[in-house]
Every structure is written in structure tokens, then in C-alpha cells.
Image (tube, rainbow, N blue to C red; front, side):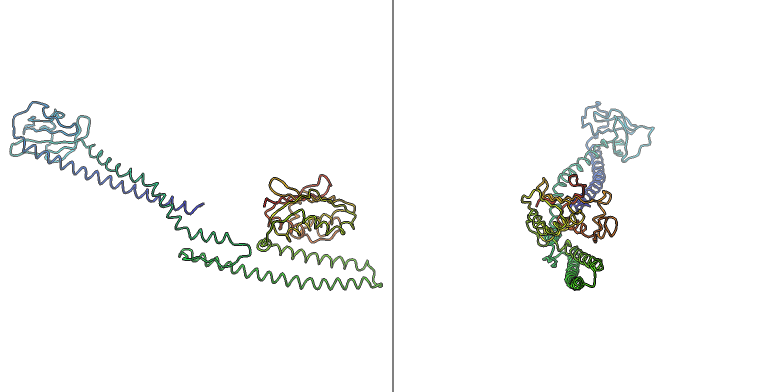
Length: 442
């Protein structure tokens, strides 16, 4: 069902049409019966008037009385000889061979079905017959019904318009509720307030407000958990790093012994930061503060921030495009996206390798491209690398670099929040991986 309003309109029009048809059918039957009764009364009255008006017992010249072609009369003697007749009834309709009884009967002659009334005039000892074509009553009834149908048929479109307006007015509270829900911002979980809430929507409004309250309570708990987790997890890691630094200054302990411990602590810190970042960009929270952002400026800022680390691996990084590329989004989320892409490119690109970042305008919006000269990713695993905690070739990449498998998952999550599209390709220029993100027009 695409539209309640359309459904109600069609249902009501169908019901009105059906009821009208049944009413007209019954009216047609009643009209036929009443018309038949009126015609019978008229035939009976005609026979009585002819009997009283015509007392002549001598035959008239044939065909002198001209009547409508739809009615006729005959006056017969007791021996069934014609005394008088209308011009369209030349043959006696009664004979000694037929059982003659007074009253109504249906007969066929002159190609029509006729309704006749036979009157026995006992005073003058003669028969008087009056008749009328049977189809006249049906024609009259059809005219009466047709005259009734035409206004009703013409009124149906007008009724449909009135019903459409009435249904629209009846559904106005539902549109108001829909409008309130559509206009809510991501951080607006306040109850829905409606004046004069209809009885049918009372339960829906109450259920919606209860859901909003539960969501608000859940977000508060999650925010509190995030804050507590960030504090409780970062503090012991910082302490571990301090203790590790003290151990590294101890000449009795070699760096080779401490290297696995240092790598483990570093990886633990990365996992915690990535998990907290993944939470931070929930659909309800990440886009609360949206603004017009220059993507090229963010790319330049991240490159400048990470340049020393990239230079330590003797890698070359370049930025193509550089023109102002405005998109609408969350500044901190987009910084995290660019940070993860450049960090991943640097992490898996060998020493003296090359990284190329491009930001430019396209027809549908803005495109960000990050390419590297690393080993790349097999094409059959392009979709799986966006899964959480998934890493190509298992926990340790062929490069020997530790990771937790959350970088691209966070990137994909941020891309979806900004209604953008991310695709992976082999880099034809550098030979490694090419990550391409298309942001829609603001």
C-alpha cells in the first residue's frame, strides 16, 4: 500500500459505486413493477370507458379509429365477430377455439409482445379488448433509471474530490507527526508534542516518545561509557609507556628484549584509539555538528602533521589538485578519515616508496584519491578489508607491520555517514592500492 489516502479514496468510491448500482438495480425492478401496474390500470380503465361510450352493436367500417401504434382495442360480439376496432388490430384476437376468460394476459401479434385486458360486457353480451405493447413499460422504466443514473455518475468525480479533501483533513495530524519526526536533528530526542491528538494516534505518539526516551537514555550511558573507557584505558597504557621508557634506559636490559613489549604496548594503544574512534562516529553523534569544510585544507593539514613520520621511512608524498573543495560534514570525522588513509598508505608502503593524494571537483561533487606504491590488496578481498578486525593474510601482514584491522572499517563508516561512496582499485601510476572516495555535492 503506497498511500493510505489513495486507498481510502478508492475504497470509498468503490463502495459508493457498488451501493449506487444495487440501489439502481432495485429501483429499476420497482419501476418496472410500478409501470406495469400503471399500464394495467390504464388498460382496465380504457376497456371500461369503451364499454360505456360505445353502445353500438352494429359493425363499423374497418380501421376508422386511429390510435397510437403502441395501443389497440377491439369490440367483439359474443360470437367473436368484430364490431369495432382500432386501425392496427384487424384480426379478432378471440375465437371459439380459445378458452376465453376475462382479465389480463400476454399475447404475440404484429411482431411484438402485447399486454391485453379482456372485459366481458354482460349487459350487451360482447367482449371488449384493450392492449398495449409490453416493451413500453420497460422503455419507460429504463428512461426513469437512466435519468437517475446520469446525475449520479456525473456526481462521482465531484464526490471523489470532496472525499479526497476530507481524507486529507482527517490525515492532517498524521502529517503533523511525520513532519515533527522528520524535522528532528540527530541530537534532538525530546518528546513529540501534538495539540488535540486524535484517539487513533494517541498510542503511536506515546510509543514514539517512549522510544525516544529509551534512545536518549542509551546514548547518555554510551557517552558516559566512552568517557570512562577513554580515561581508564589510556591511563594504564601511559603508565606502561613510562615504565618501558625507564626500562630502555636500563643498560642491563637490551633493546632486543624490550622490542616485543614496546610493539605490544603500541599496538594496544592503537586498538584502543581505533575502537573509541569507531564508537565516536555513530550515526546519531558524528553528524550533529555539520559545517561547510574544505577537504583540501584537511588533507594539507594531515600531510603536514604526519610528514616527519613519513620522511623517517624516506617516503615521498605529494598532493595533486589543491583547489578549494567544499563539502558538508563533520570536521573531526573527516580529519580521522584522511588520517587513517594516509597512515595506512605510509604503513604498508616500503621505504623510499611513494604516496600520492588527490582532491578535486567532479560532476557529482568532490573526489578524494589516495594511492601508494605498496603491495596493494588482492581484488577478491576489496570488500572484506572493510570488515572490522579483518586483515589481509591474518594478524600479521606480509609487510610484518602490526595492525588491528579497524582503519578501513572506520573509513567506511565515516564515508557512509557522509553519504559518500568508497571504492578500491589497483593503482596504475604507483602499482599499489588506490582508494577513491566520492563526496556528494553539499
